[in-house]
Image (tube, rainbow, N blue to C red; front, side, top):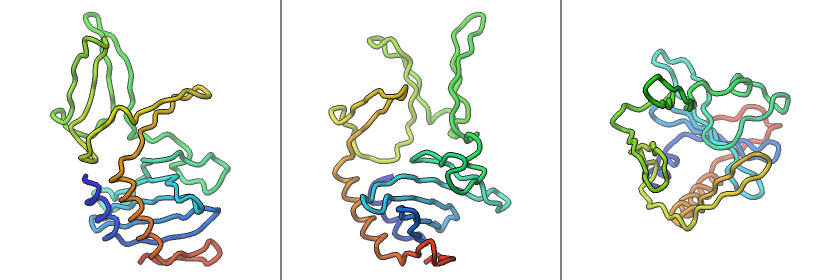
Length: 191
């Protein structure tokens, strides 16, 4: 989705905001019934959490699916089912060899076969799996890609393009227009 389209979707959604524990929590309700919840650091405006929820075919609320951030640790706040178990919808990568071939399986991929491309990179001696689904139309620039390794974790960073930073700045301006409840105010109504 183009950056401007994403920003327009956010502008047209019904929004509720809450200030709690140093975080600005924003709930979005989109016309198609999807919900998105985001949490921003109150001081820096940094996006800490983004998660999505959609209704089932029968209208029941589904589980929250994390897109950005990590679920809170059990005991560190409200305990919903999304904080107790790993998301079953996340892709699972595994290797399974047969008698005649090496085989890798990636489970829980939601798109049809024609969305995926699988090829061999001879120079790197690797198999590449990629999708044709693009969440944005901006070109990728390898010079702004970096990675680090710390505490048994590989951290991959890609510097945000100017267009994305501008859209995020516009979004912050929009969010400042939403009346924000404080955790002591009780219920907050969707606007």
